[in-house]
Length: 253
Image (cartoon, rainbow, N blue to C red; front, side, top):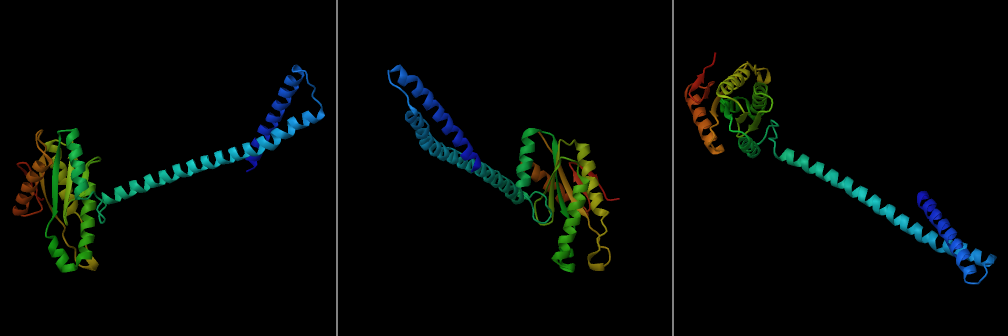
């Protein structure tokens, strides 16, 4: 408010000075005389009109600027909240990985950028037995352990998602066939090394079966999914705790 008063006072004084200069220059030129009363009126009239008018204008201008700042701040907060909600909506609540829809959307975007890469479908072995024997809370703990092992096994930049109850998807961005087998086997091994002891019980082995498909230039996401699912089915039928990618099999040690 002080700033408004000071600025409007400056405007009013300038208006009074201009008024005096104009009257002092034009009245004598027209043959008139400028006395003290005229000078006083030249000063008081601008002060009486310009000061409140400019004060109101400055006040309104400051209010408008403040409203713009608050609107910009609210817009930024809304945009940040929208980003947080969008991120939360794209994630699986338990593991923090991408959910099924977001995973396949990310996979599709990656496929559009490059023909190279591979899709792994990872399924926890005998998981129903854990839920039935120890309850779903213990099953959730086991899933978190498996998800952490998968995360340790992948490379930076790979896309991870939980695509089913105990099923995970990994897209190995730009991976060659050898890299795919190496990463898939590393994931299998990381899960196998878990020492899972639910509620002070004996150690329960955790293993996964992994089916993988390397990208072909013309392959769609659906093609990749079908191929990886077929390899996963073969791994399950082959005794579980197996990695099958294309025609290569990496057996448990």
